Amino acid sequence: MSQTKYIFVTGGVTSSLGKGIIAASLAKLLQARGYRTTIQKLDPYINVDPGTLNPYEHGECYVTHDGAETDLDLGHYERFLNVRTSQANNVTTGRIYQSVIEKERRGEFLGKTVQVVPHITNEIKERIQILGKSGDYDIVITEIGGTVGDIESLPYIEAVRQLLWELGENNGIVIHLTLVPFLSAAGELKTKPTQHSVKTLMESGIKADILVCRTEHEISDDIKKKLALFCNVKQEAVIQSIDASTIYDVPILMRQEGLDNVALEKLALPNALEPNLEQWNQFLNKHKNPKHQVTIGLIGKYVELQDSYKSILESFIHAGAANEVKVDVRSIHSEHLTPDNVNEKLVGLDGILVAPGFGERGIEGKIKAVQYARENNIPFLGICLGMQMAVIEFARNVLGLDGANSTEMDEKTTHPVISLMEEQKLVTDMGGTMRLGAWDCVLKKDSLVHKVYGNTEIAERHRHRFEFNDDYKTQMEEAGLLATGLNPKTGLVEVIEVPSHPWFVGVQYHPEYRSTVANPHPLFVGFVKAVLAQKQQQTNASLA
Image (tube, rainbow, N blue to C red):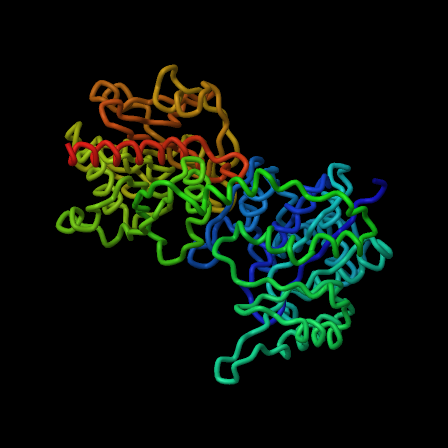
């Protein structure tokens, strides 16, 4: 194919309609037809990246293989496509302005007045086309954050308008995702919000080629015809996106609606080949028809917002399907766990995962949860801060090191079993200074994690500044907590486990970032398998 084609996904009426899921679903369908497809996200906020954002603000910060801190939608892209994303797949207004200002300071604009048009819009167009010009993709889908009409989105919309003109006919199209609300008092679906949204888009010089309409109720042919007439699109280009029981249904629903057919037709690309969704349907079948059920407690401090732990929740869905198990995740706020209520709050759990996080708030509750899992032989997985809490708990309650802590929480702790990496001690900026992206790890032969991975050499993604303090390693290992995964270059501890426990693993990295529908992460698969085995064993023992 001589030229990369571009699909732009915009949103209207309200945010959180699921532009990322629609983009990922369309990309999945195009990929299943043999097209090399990728997705990028343009975020209109002025933060350079979401690395310094509180999870309550923007959900989880997703980390790519190359170490970019990005929007959580990139997680959806990878989970659906099973293809790595990179720094180029997430662009923010902060990064755009930072780049333009740096160019101006270097004198690259030859003394001209630097303006939003053309300098900011040119920078946006360059970023949009980086992936397309790489030669690696036939189709690039670009999701524009926010909604049409937002002040902060205007430069992106103008850049897309210019780029569509430059690309020429059949080389770029716009999909507009909108809402068709149901008014219960009137007992009908209303099209006016969509009409106004499309009108706002047209006022910016962009015509929607395809309308994807989010709805709670079926959209009739009459309503589709009305939307087509007033929004200036063909009727077959009005696509219903009805609420689904799982996000993994959406590619199938979009296929039934013909979204991929309409997109390929408008891009003048062959669409005779049916998409191969056999593996996807197998996953969906296992996910929807589990043979067993387990309950796993997710101990975190941002549990009020589900998106804070999005990748972990999705990893449990992938691992559950692989084991034909429904994983019921019970979110438990670590700040509310105390020595007095920990037994009551955690009773009935088949497994416990202590989640990542930053800062002092809620860590004593996490430590109590680790202790409960260790002392009651409940399968345990600690991720990043969760692994560090497991080390602190072991130091305090097994080694008897009173006051053992991380220097992140207590700089003056007498037993800093978790401490700051030497190279981080002089760093003052918060953004992008952590150990980020994929780092190698060598697993000890015949360890639990070695059996889980089926390999001794792995590479996993990181996002942290504090590490296991090597000064305590010998003491820990002699007491039964083993370091079974080490970074081959630095010797830093990546994995800890307690062999005397049925299944007790802590990892410094984030396995959830690598779990996809096609390749569920082995650590989550192994954890869920162990949780099920333990539950069945206990059930059999009680029946005997």
